[in-house]
Amino acid sequence: MNNFTFHVPTDIRFGKGQVECLPAELSKYGKKILLVYGGGSIKRTGLYDTLVSLLKDFEIFELAGIEPNPKITSVRKGVEICKAEKIDVILAVGGGSCIDASKNIACGAFYDGDPWDLVLDKTKVTKALPIAVVLTICATGSEMNSGAVISNEETNEKRELASDLLYPALSVCDPTYLYTLPEKQTAAGSADILSHVLEQYFQPNDEAFITDKLSEGVMQTVIKYCPIALKEPENYEARSNLMWASTVGLNHLLTVGKGGAWSCHPMEHELSAYYDITHGVGLAIVTPAWMRYILCDKTVDRFVKYAENVWDIKEEDPYKAANLAIEKTAEFFKACGLPSTLKEVGIGSEKFEEMAKEAVRVSGISNRSFFHLQSGDIVKIFESCEN
Ligand code: NZQ
Ligand code: ZN
Image 1 (tube, rainbow, N blue to C red):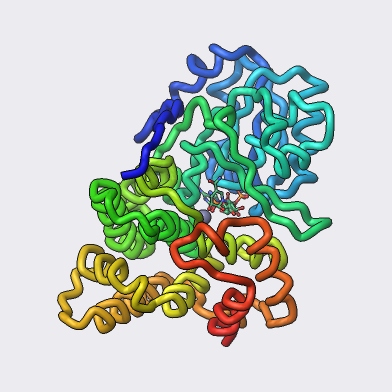
Image 2: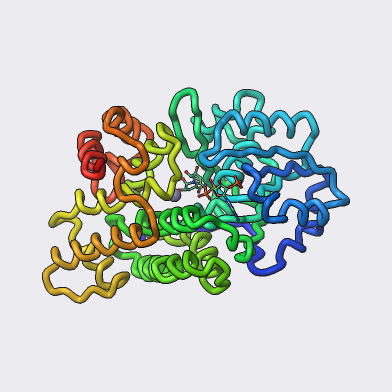
């Protein structure tokens, strides 16, 4: 195994009714809260009213309308409020988009320039406001990690900001909040969780047996419970297992001893940067195409492990096993109602080259990933899932 440090300071409060802890926990930071939320689901579900009544002794300022694939323009508005009102703590209520915007706001509040500078250069992050989270969709793991993915609509860039200062201090994860998720978000979130684990699992270092075993369990959890949650939205067992899978899927636990750079995420981030599609939908399209493209003598052994341990495929011929596992992965996404071609989400070939070059420029896909891909390879992968 590679050397590693593992220090995740987030206090997780998991389960029904855990939101009750907020007044006591938030009062540790002060009285002024910036409440960050999205396009209105929390008002429709009644969570907004619950929070306002629980936090009646606090002074609440609001930043509503955080968009999926959160934009730097929204972050700028939040930073302005924090500076003008001397906010003590940020409360992000929603999913990855609200949490990520909050992370950029939290460090932007202590920075004199444009918060986009911090996305481009994380060494400029020197201080951040504390962040608390109430999670309403399980997907990104942002509730227990140090990353934030922010989009700049002027430049078509979608980039990751990461700093140890950006771990949420507290995350309330109540699986009953997932009951109201639309099917598309349940499916896309599950695709995202599966992809996070795959990205960490498909890495050159083969010695982190314990990490691989944990990863296989998380992948099987998603494969088992996503279809149940789609059929029975209020199935607590399914929702709670998926919710914890999302947190464990990207809180650094499944990367320890392995490391390396990712492949499907840099490709998908270009699709959602240029076309504003749902992140998990883009991953469901790109992932099987990436698997088919990279299957070769150098990679086949890892595919066999994935086939045997995740999909229970018993097949002597390694290539047959690998191909069966790839098709099982593609079928899983399809059965969850996710698209499998770029055409289905309105993406044509016009920007394939531009997006491929950008993916290489901003990530380690060409030199540190499981199977190094240059921009020409990425164009071929995009082409293979065009129709
Ligand atoms: O905006 P509202 O009205 O709240 O509706 C949201 C939004 O439209 C809706 N929703 C959330 N909870 C709901 C609900 N609707 C009904 N009932 C509920 N309980 O779901 C929609 C999607 O929300 P969003 O926060 O965008 O989803 P997600 O958690 O998938 O976040 C996606 C963003 O996170 C980034 C993605 O690129 C994307 O920008 N990522 C962040 C990562 C991280 N910080 O570690 C890693 C990931 O790989 C990813 O890149
Ligand atoms: Zn993701």
